[in-house]
Image 1 (tube, rainbow, N blue to C red):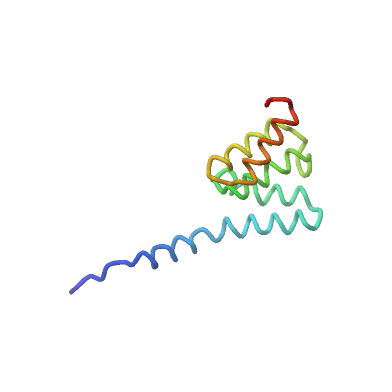
Image 2: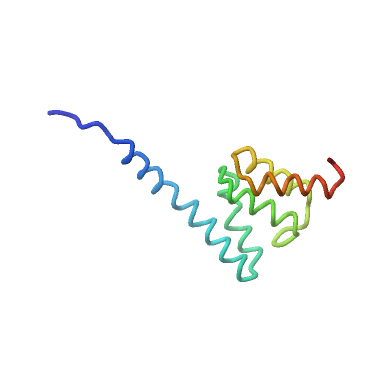
Length: 106
C-alpha cells in the first residue's frame, strides 16, 4: 500500500482548526468588552493570553492599562504588552512604548 504525503495545505488547515477555540475565546472577550462587560472580557482573555495568544496578551495589557475588569496596574500592562510585542504584535509594541513614555521610562 502506497502512503500519500501530507500536503502543507492540509497541515495548515489542521493547525488553523486546532487554534479555533483560543480564537473563539479572544473574540468572545472582544464582544464582552464592546458590551461594557470588562470583567467578562478579561475572563475570556486570561487563559489564551497565558497560553501565548498575542491578541489576548495585548488585550490584557489594555485592560490593565485602563483598569477595566482588573485593578489598574501599569506594570502588569507592560508585562502583557511585552509578551505580545515579542511575538510581533505591532499594537502591543506601540502601546508599550507609549506606556513607558507616559511613565517617564524613556
